[in-house]
Structure formats: C-alpha cells, structure tokens
Length: 573
Image 1 (cartoon, rainbow, N blue to C red):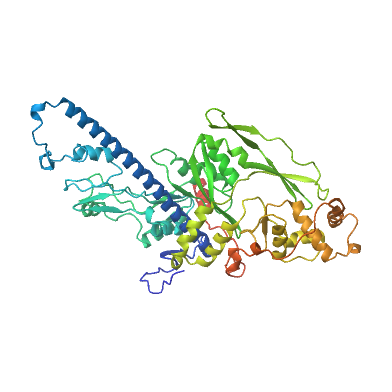
Image 2: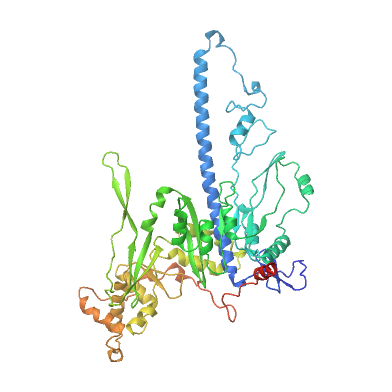
C-alpha cells in the first residue's frame, strides 16, 4: 500500500482517504459502498493477470498482422512481376532503347514500391497502418491492440480505477508521427453498480484520480484540433453506469459493443450474472454457458482464496471444441465415509486415422458407467453423487510462468507481491487432477498419529505416483494415485505406529479400513525414505502461500446499505 502522506488531497469531513498502489479513494462514514482492504491481494492479482493477458493478446495480434503484411507484400510482388512480364511481351522492339521511368518520374502521391497511390494504400490499410502524410514513402506500423474492460459490480470503483491506471493497453493514447497525429481507438473501463450511492462514490473517486470525462467538451475539441476531425469527445478512461449488471452485459453482446474483459466480483454468488457475461465463476457453469453460444473456455488461473474463489478464463469461439466439452465434464461418486472418489466422464473422444489420407477424424461418444457400485470398495460406506463438474485443467502453466515473470520485474508495484508469488508458484506446480487430501484427515480415519507431509509425499513418489501441493489449503496434497493407494500408504504407516484396536469399536470406519489389508497381500510396503522431488520449488523458498488473519474478527464484511430498499419504499408511498 502506498504512502499517501505526501499527497495534496483534500479530504472532506466525514470521509477517510484510502490509498492502494497509485490509486486513491474517499470512503464515506455512511458506508455507501462496500470496500474490503484485505482484498488488495485479489485486486493485485487481477491487475497482474489481466495485464499479462493483454500483452499476450497484443503479441498474438501483432504476429497475425505481420503475417498478413507478408502475404500482402508477396501478392503485390507477384502481381507486379506478372504485369512486368506482360508489358515486356507487348513492348515493340523499337522502344527497347528508351529509358525506363525512375522514381523521379512517378506521379505525385504514387507509391513506387507497389504502383498504388498513397490514398489507395490508405484505404487498404485502414485500421492497421499508421504513416506520415508528408513523406513519399509509407511505413507500415502495427497499432497496439487496446481493449475495453467491464467491471459489472464496482462498489467504490477502486478496482476499475486501478485497471485504468496500471494496465497500459486499457489506456486512451495518441500515436505521433512527424507532423500528423493519429489517434488509437479509445479504450476504457466501464464501472457499473445498481446502487445509486455506490455510483455516486465511484464518480467521486474516478474524478479524484483524474480518470473522468473532460470538463469542457469545447475545450477538449480545440485542444485536439490536429487529431482526426471525427475524434469523439473524451468521456474518460473510467465510464460509470448505474443499472442492472445482467442488463448491461446483455447490451454489450453485439460485435460492435462487445467488451474484451468482464470482471465479476459480487457480494455473494455470481450465478445470476454468468449467462449475461456469457462466462465466469464455477468452471462447469461457465463451460455450459459458453457452449450455448458456440464457445469454449480455457482456464488460465483458478484459485480458492480465503473465503472466495477467483477465476481467470479465456473464451474462444470454435464449434468443434464445444463438442469436446462433454469429455472435460464429469460426475463423481464420493464415499461419505473415507472420501474415496470415482470419476464418471459424461463423454469420450475416439480418434480414427483415415488409412489413405492420414487425416484424423474425431468421434464423440457417450461414456459407459457407472464406474463403481452403490457401496464403497474401500470401506463399504454409501456413495454420494456430486457434479457435474469441470474435470479439465484448472490452470494454464504457460500463462502462470508469464505472470510470475511480470511479477519478478514489477514487485514494487504490488503491495501483496510476496503472497502473489507464493500462491502463483504453488498453482503452477499443481497436478492437473481433481481434489486434494490432507494427511491429518486420512490419519483421523485410521485413528492413527499423523505422518509428516513429506513422508506421505515421499511414499507416494517412491511408489511411482506424482505428487504436488495444493494452493487451496495449507498442508494438503494432490496426487494421481487412487485413494486406495493413499490408504495403503497409511496402512504401512500404522504398522510402524500401531493403533490401539481395543479403543476402536467393531463398527468403526477405521476397523473397516485396517481390515482391508488382508485383501492386499500383493501390494508391497510403503517406502517412506525421503524422495528428492518431495521438496518442490515452492518449499525451497519461504513463500507466503496462505492468508494470515490481518485483524480481529477478520472475514467477509457486511454488505453496504445501497439505499435501494428505502428508495422502493418511498416510491410506494
């Protein structure tokens, strides 16, 4: 958090100044809008992830633009060569001694490289070329991709303000070239809230940070007279809207009005807003919602943090990928006793290679099931069905690497950089398998003392399984081993650290789990020798991976009084 002591900001009576990084907001004593200071980690993480995404998207678009330029240049070169050959074939021999026209003979405004006039080139490249009108040569230049971000539930507007100030590609900029000024498309943040008191707070805070509309449209127009005559009035980098979030998002469905990023951070569940955003929160719900519009999701980062979840998801359009969604969706049979789980995918893909052409055809089939009976094979308890759930990866490791690289070179810009690094490092190391477990929980099932975390991880690694930590809970592990394999590790542990069976009832779950050893004679004893891979990158460095209580009675605050109920009562009267 930045020091606001040296800032010359006048704080009105009844308000307090809250500073976060380079942004400042005024908080009213009337609690007109909700702000949780502990959520600085959430906001820091969001700024970093969206910034890295925007830079990656810009690189993708620049690469496509360069490829298009190369294809265009090749087509024009081929056309010029063909035209030259045809001209030479038709030229009489008596004219062969004539001098060909040099560059000085080109008509004014012609492009000697392509034979096109500058106006023709301008028409071809509109939207992607920037060049100077007072030069004879045109120089193609890529225009960085700017994007629009919608924060549908803004409250104080702090998050939107930080996006506008800290993410370069969301800014309104002007490109300069010799004597001509050419404006990039205006890109901005839309801050919305249903509460009138919240939008009033947003307006006050946006103006405090200098991100609002220009005060005098006439003055703004005169100051940018060298810009295109069609330059619109500057409405500001943060544009405030008071209204229903779902209605606002549905109003931005068309191609011309569609936004690039939707940020949903509601007080409570995001379920009512997912269809309107066409995308966000529980991954299966997002995937199902996206599929209805011929789109599919690609999770970049999915975190369970403190008392909430935060997901960063890219949306792509491809009907063929939508057909694959069923194979990334599953129901789970979960034992109510020992917590063993069994996956039941909803669909499966079959690849068939054509013998003659070698082309790969995909066939989409339903999945046979169920994978287990009504009773758990481990302890005999009843099975419960959970789902449907997203069974694909939660994170994109390549994206996480780029966010970590960005964080390493910008640590001073984030107040929670230490915890961000810890959380992202653990998430990057996570296995792409469902569910985690804690050794203390399993030990409780066996009524045994709890083995050290590294001993359990080493035993699984020595047995040929993969193991990782989980970002969601301290002291938790994820593995590709079955729960039966995990239980076998604990059965071996109990042999070395015996359980007093006289203290366990005949109907106890622990007795059922321990008795199963007689049916596992073919399995070898667990090897608890320390495995080198049990020490991960996250455990080599002391990282803050989990939030520590920053204050007494810490947790979700009370929802701010929006005044909406009072307003309805006054209208009824």
